Image (cartoon, rainbow, N blue to C red; front, side, top):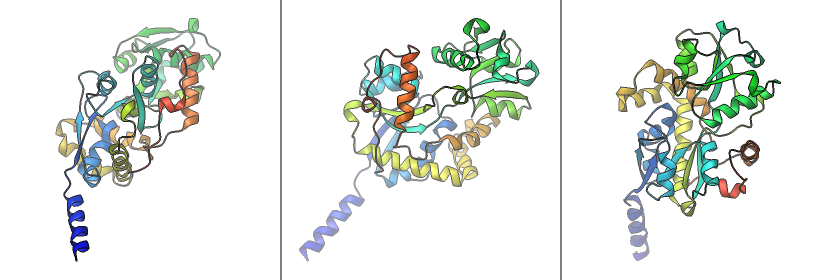
Length: 311
């Protein structure tokens, strides 16, 4: 009888245990790229894992890694290329999960610019942001077509890529996102040619990853966090329209055509297994970064990333 009472007491204490808090610093303000996080919260998947997750939209996209490295947040969302540079610079970060496991950036030219193939960009103007990686990707892609940097003109248009393209200030732009600006242009009936870096010799990489402080890499909350996200991605795959409805109900200010098109365009890109990573892809991209002097040296893969099993 005492044993039964003890078991009932233990079950009750587990059932009513206070949820553990977890802070996640986003890469930017809430948008369709964060759909699994929103769905995991709305569908109660975090609650199932006894987690109370707080999302923080930073004033600067560079903040997530800095806050995590300074132990001011549990998890940050950042980009794999920038993350590798941060590790190279000595920040105590490690990848614990993946949100979007493939590149989203691409090169876009309007059809009326007569650019049908990447090689047609010879003697053309290409607009880029102020990202060194964006310029590097363009040059590496063109190199596969037998073109050199002297064969093109790179123009820094800051973050006005779409405007520069539509106003014909440039013949093509590098850095548009295939899940945001590309569907937006298609919705506006603009005809274009889209070139994906991974089709032109650039090793594939993860667009968005989750990072933690390296000393917290095996925090027991993290596998449960990733389990909730895995369920959320499955829900998105099976209920895209319902999930969109839930998103705009919580964030009515996001209810516009651009976000709607982006929501449905982004769903195929979410990592189905957010806890795992492809070690071969990571090694190839690290080699690419080092070869092109974006990092000084390669780290062991175990320094970059760990695979976490579901909680």
